[in-house]
Image (cartoon, rainbow, N blue to C red; front, side, top):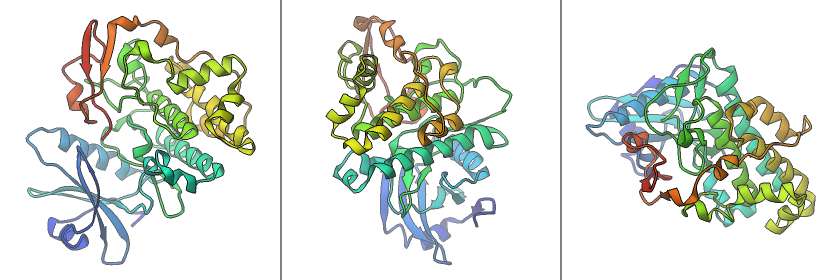
Length: 348
């Protein structure tokens, strides 16, 4: 199956594979995921999408089949097949025994990980993104890199998942045109908000940098406060400590053991490069892999948060109270408006 194109299944077959959807693995704005098993014994995850009159679900479905269905890499979740008829829209994936990274990252489950494993997960995720950006026939931009979209198999090998917002583009294209916001607040690149730069594959690099900050701290970067109160926001705090020559001290304060400080510092230095405000300043993901592996010396980065200082804090207030991630809820308003409160989608 791994070498074949996705197989089309029927609604009746999915009922059989999942024992009438007996075991539920998770849910979100997209629908529900169930555990199942193929007749040959291979475990699967069946992602049943919500049906509605809105064509966004159909667009998400086609995006996933049209992107991940054409790829194969050890660090990408494998799409075995799909179902699309008058009853059901569903995607059939390989089953990932340990679920998503956020399940471990933001709970006591993280104690199961050694730092070597966290670094391995970061490197594997970077390799998956490098494949999408640089090795596919057509470049694939994911648009929603975050812990919830990094899945872990039985050996904690990471695999990038959820291509519902992904977009194919020609390798020669310098940027991508589309209407509306994409991604998840807290991970989305500043060009989505500031409109100073075109949208390119470098938005995934930014999101990966934010993921690295969370892996080091084992805490969410996500802000629920006005811009004027972003004082203890860890990425900015880490940068300030780096500028003052106290990055190692900060790493120790977080609770990272001395034997692991070099790995944590390497991840933070890589993150600083990934989240540069200018997309052109961000490295390619293949270079990010080398930085994390220690194969290259990481040169001193520029201040990645200059755009924060260009905003008038009294003019921008973010309200993350509504919780959706599909791009439809962004279509009718600019993400930044003067003296107005913005309703922005949050994590699933």
